[in-house]
Length: 336
Image (tube, rainbow, N blue to C red; front, side, top):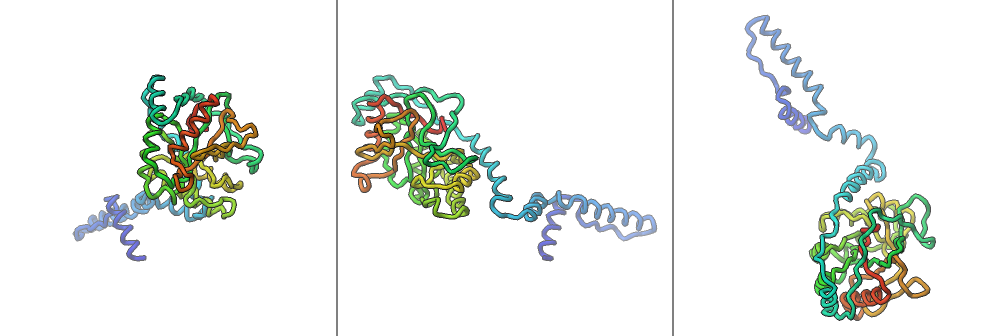
């Protein structure tokens, strides 16, 4: 304790020269004694009044200790405010080179498509109000978990989960065809090569949160959910340079705690899906087996071992389906 006090005293003295020990000359008379006493008294008073101010963070640390460091009491509100500020600073997708219809068709044909993908209209100035479908509702006052975006436009949103397969040819296809999409990354799958996802992000692909280890969220505690979601937020901010605003629960399974924790970690929505894409087919939730305006499509970073096909095969399957039904792909973050 003496060492700590001595260290603090030295820091206080360094910041406030008036607090340094005064060594008066040997007094030579009554007047000298009075002057020396006044100097010592002034030094002591100055140190007493500036002590806390001389040590940035001391008062805050004392207040925090008094309130406790439990999650949900002191740390979360501060972190949430910082995350909200960071969300506002996220850069939009980089502008893409404008292509003529002939250039778009030529690019599509190079990738084995008969038609060029349709181009989505500009996103609305104000984002629509998202809602959670009845089959996924967990109660009021929670962030939405939408399976589609409310819109009258014939657009759909391609979202890709996990991060296991890192297909460089897929990057080229996304770049050549200027495909808008969103990636929801799990650290245990993506960590092997975050550089791949930085390259994907540089193409305008947004990077979002899919937990650290892909657990079934409604089977773990609230604190474990907090670690899974906020832990991945921190990693993606460090590795990609942006803090996600969307969170997708693994398997689409979640409870009210999941959505509350996701919001505290900085998410404003937890997107689900109405279609799932594979290398050779698409599965639809709708009975008519067709896209509906604003549908969210799920797929994964997989390859031949899981699919018998590549990421490029999957993208060809999606583009053929949406184009033949008169739909264009749009970027989910522009609407959610």
